[in-house]
Length: 320
Ligand code: ADP
Figure 1 (cartoon, rainbow, N blue to C red):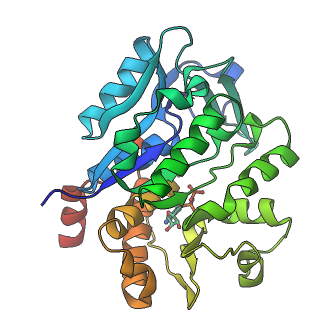
Figure 2: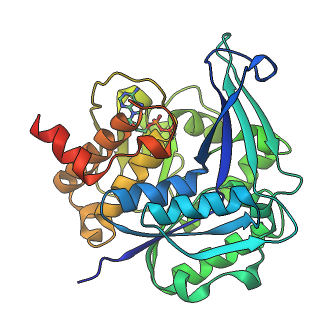
């Protein structure tokens, strides 16, 4: 039969990345367009792995917006939940990893189309048909997309979807650290699956450690699975009845962009049709090993979307 639908809600944008590495934005000789936005990456990750995904969000009715919608469709992601804003333009980001190791960001968001999604514009039928509803945090930053985000979550939950949250902290987009923490924690207890990176865990708890005690301080009663991703060190998982860690795969990493989204997409595409995986440690560990593999593969190529693994790539890799 037809696979169950995973709906991913939030922003999609274009990252402009310098053609050479290790320079500041001002020094860049040119830029490459890299489509991104964590929720869009997750939808594409799911679809590439053979799952059924839809992206819900707003794009500008401009060249970049239509290019992004085209990328979703080419990757088999449903675009039925996309709205186009005729006034505002598609969000853009200029991102570089400078030679001093610091990331430098510049954003076009004044406001960009994604920020203008209104609750009354949501494709509610699509959202209600989701078995998993996934979201990030950037859409919490301003109205009206904040209200659209909260409504979409509520509608999905009422219709029986599993709620999945990756805060995907992008601190430079928030007015302050305090505001980021407050808003992220304000929707914390809604999600049944939460994935944080080690850095996000430390940010949200104020701890310098990523130990079990710190992770469990973020536990809440509705939660079924808390994941802490550790980059090249793999991941940790926590449920009501067991917790542990899953080893990483060692690969030649060239760019870690999108690894977390690939990891989430792999997890969700496995649990969407069988939530009992969340209750059986051996099966969960198997799925997390697959998610670690997908995350690792994503780091072996530049960019997020071009680096997300496909079913055929995975079978090729496991054969060799
Ligand atoms: P995020 O992108 O959200 O910060 P991570 O960087 O922790 O998330 O990556 C998610 C997962 O991808 C990790 O748990 C790990 O399994 C895999 N991964 C990430 N970076 C590497 C790496 N350098 N080598 C191998 N696996 C990696």
